[in-house]
Length: 285
Image (cartoon, rainbow, N blue to C red):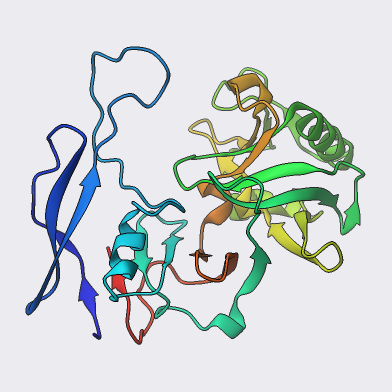
């Protein structure tokens, strides 16, 4: 199979899982089940939600079903453009594995796409904030750190910015922490000259070598409607994430992120998410 777009042609609005025919090409149809989410939070919901596509690590996920029918390897990935849009793909045909940075999936936190524990680095140095249980979640717009890590990071950023021509803007309620410059910012590119110190989450692989997920300014800053620059890393403890730390969409922009369920690894590499790369065999949306 070379190609090819995925077109779900059945209606997903029933109870629980429904059967759908997924058109992978003009000559191939595959039957598989998929479902819609009704209660996304505990308690009774009077407003059913749908459109939740199962792409997790379980046997009932869409990619697991495609793999069981011999169509693709059990690999799912996405590429989110910083300009909006992007694509989702199944299989391993859209990337060169040798150009991807890989880290092992946790064997403890199997409900999530998690590399396990990480240590926060600032300016290329360890901060001492470690044992951060991290998950990758494309359903989250922002990135979240637990309260201890969040407080440490904001203190480091404020110290770095002291003496520079940025002032905190508490009147801007876009996000909890915003700064204003001498004139309104039009883009993160205009503001990032003030945020020169690198951020990273360092994951331990086999207890020795550490793989770093770097956070450049575009991966943690936004520009508000008021022209201020705001921190897109939030306090996860305050929103009920307890001790979980989430890498959200803001930090995955302009990268191809790959979840290889067969090799049990997560990978990422810089990418132009506005355009599909050449591919050997993969299904994309």
